[in-house]
Image (tube, rainbow, N blue to C red; front, side, top):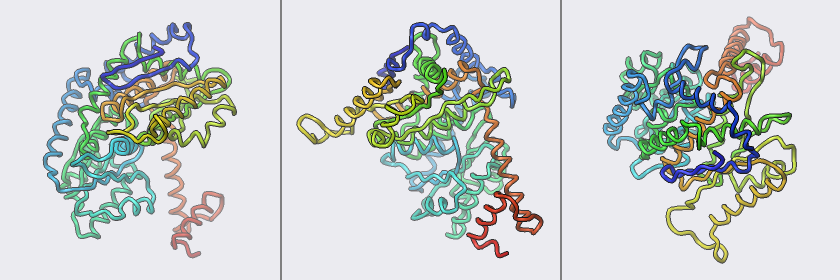
Length: 468
């Protein structure tokens, strides 16, 4: 469990520097975690708040799913092939409108893999920032642009705002938005009905049993991969292979990873996870993991209803750049974190220049990883290392699946529900209160009293919408 390597997946894991003991490895809680994961895959109700199953593992193994879900998954792959065949060189850019899991996964995959020979460049509108919309649309030939709107319900306001802004840009260009638009949403949702009524180019499925932060092996990830001209089937195969490697008790890398997190976070100091991929292509991985891990694990109460304020903080960027940013504190500051190093064995496709006798730039990159890892070990700081043979669809599928499985197993070990997010809903409700206050201020029905009202008025004034 401390060391894992699967050459067919192109991924290895080394937990030897995480301080695990034989007693840790024999903890009966590990058996319970594996049993709970098996029950989840078998269709147990994983989100009692909403009374639903959580089936993201079925996305790459539909044979495990209930018949209706299995048929829906396979039909989605066929619909993806059909859509890809009909596009036929009409577009050179894809505009993706989404937020959270509907944007982070595609952004990470696009940045890591790039655009294939026949692929579309991908631009993402993942916030309700007017200036951000302008930046994403700058220089885009909308006549050659395909727009993807990803939203389960169509009611997520950030995504709807982005859709309305993009649709207005098409109209200003004298183009039909519907002729360029694809909806990815739940059947019968507000977005589905709107797209059907307007005659959008295509409507593809989301399902309520797939959470946003675990949706990247659904069409949320597969459609962008196909448009990038990347091998989405290899991506699925990599995830399926990692799932198969993480179902048992022995030699399970996700179980070992979850155990290492658990032991590192125990005791007086709760340690954060610092993600350090030594590869520019993986720079967005820490952002992807922030939602996957922190939204899943950050919970006020455990499964027994006790207040525990559980969480695992994730931050990071890339090596070796960030050795110059915060390694000093990781080594000599508070012992409140552990490092996750990610090494990629293949430097580039083709030979590399020797920048000094016998050493390439890639040799230096690996040397900096090893040096930093050893410096942390010398200071008594914990770290783990993940190795990829290269950055390809199969390897990324395995990497993402490894962390998805580890998150579910870790949640079992600490006794929280990884599959709901009440804190997110609380923030949305609070935003609604602020917008109602703004409407009252504009109508003269409220006084400018309190810091919320003062900031609302300052924002309105800065945009020429407040003259009082």
